[in-house]
Length: 325
Ligand code: HEC
Image (cartoon, rainbow, N blue to C red):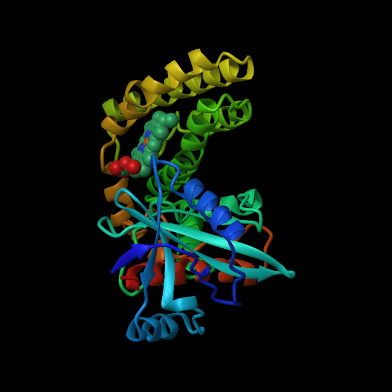
């Protein structure tokens, strides 16, 4: 049953959270950033029964601290989101996860500091969760042995190497695109010049797809040509967009953004609809984008414990969202 939120506690897996009206505002702000694609976000308190609590505790291996037996859930459209708290060097990190229970998919995941600001140094780690389907049982591994062996194979001389390389590169690029493009749109919408640097980064990523068909045996000549044209055109469009934003021409930038996906991005999507997806599936990379069996890549330069804790927090938050009634 869903009821209106009064002042429920933040769900804490590793410690008891401090609760107060100030924190309510901070969490609502975080939830809005997590559910950035939705026009409005509603805060609700959902009950976790004893049976559900035991289930989450068993699956997560940790005691669950639930003030009032409730979990704070944020709702927007078909999405629901919640937060978990971790401590790193005495400071709190809030791990937020938004899922679509209908699509059985993680929509976004992100870490925030105590003031509700996105911890941008962790963003590359959380990109891998965006649009990752989740199954039953819910498993994430750190690190990713299977993917590593596939990447090694893609660097070898095997006949498959070109195909693997193309799929890995494409999925990596689209994950970054799915991360950067909404940020560019939102920041440009707020007349923020910071969007220019992101558009420049994305232009380089998409430009790198111009030769994606090189070595891939599963694309025919027409598809390869159309993808190349689209990558070049998309790259040029993003470079143009970066210039407009940098020059403060926000009205022009917004106009360009409005038509951008149908006139550029989607040309490539139409050329290669489901081909990469099917190939990823066939090569054992699973449908969970290219992360095998929901393997998780650790944060660059990090020895694994923090990455594991962050991945665990994502997993536990999803379990909670699925149990909350
Ligand atoms: C050179 C080709 C190419 C370009 C250009 C391109 N994409 Fe993609 N994109 C792909 C492929 C391939 C997939 C995987 C889909 C599949 O295999 O069915 C994909 C998947 C995606 C996905 C995830 C799956 C989905 O359908 O939601 C998103 C989001 C996405 N692209 C956004 C964009 C955006 C935004 C742009 C433009 C800024 C863009 N793409 C430009 C090739 C491209």
